[in-house]
Image 1 (cartoon, rainbow, N blue to C red):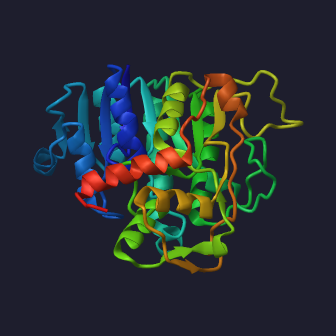
Image 2 (cartoon, rainbow, N blue to C red):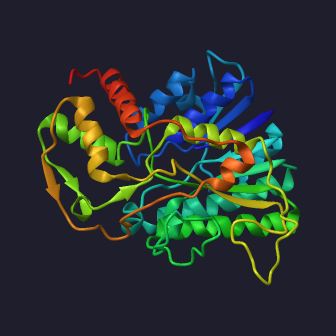
Image 3 (cartoon, helix red, strand yellow):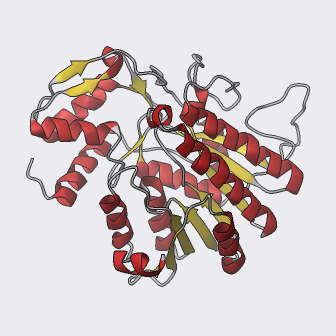
Length: 352
């Protein structure tokens, strides 16, 4: 199978790309490599898979020196002509769209970046799929779409019309846009609502990075909502396993769907939404405790109120994903955090 993986220099995209290559698939990776966070980490992820920085900088396109099945293209999804040419040239079977402007709080500061990447860019992906007989589009949504919802666990059968950030609104928009294309053009689309993914090669703007940096320097860590937070922390290997299982199973029509009692997570069109998380929420203070144990150091904690756009708890109902694909997250927070710490020490060459 030939896959387009967008966001392949990003955290989850990097891991998905490597997993596909391991099983022998052909992958074209795409990423804009913007400076939202340290580009050196993005180039390092690419180098791990044999994509050399110098070749990207020379012509925006590179073939892996370690795996001929992997080609990388530096491209902005908002570049309509560039995206359409890529689809035309490569003839993909499946598209896994993980490229997006991420971050809840950054969407308050720079909303235009979210419209350009998450709305305009996603439109170009949909159009590329529509015109090139793509067998399945899998795309990243987010647990952030649940917004003001309070019923736990979050279910894809819940209404998600009250987002609390533009980032969340852009992800809800992606789901609506995908349904439109599934309906109009019989394009199988599956949206995945990710729940707090963490692990090696992660994003430096995420809590685990910020915590470990502060703790190792003897600085206080910011603990929001005075520590009264719960997150469905999900280790990246479990997420990747779920993504691949979903990609191998194109969305199908729900023959029992009815507009009189509509299920938001499925449709009479080939459209599906899944939660993908650990389904085992962890107290933020326990998460910090796992990090302290792995580091052998106690954090200085700066207790703060809840941030704008944030929610106090997330909890994924993944029963339909387990039923349909056999997905079963297996990595505990203690093990996952310890693996992250080990990677951090090796990658940044620090003796903690």
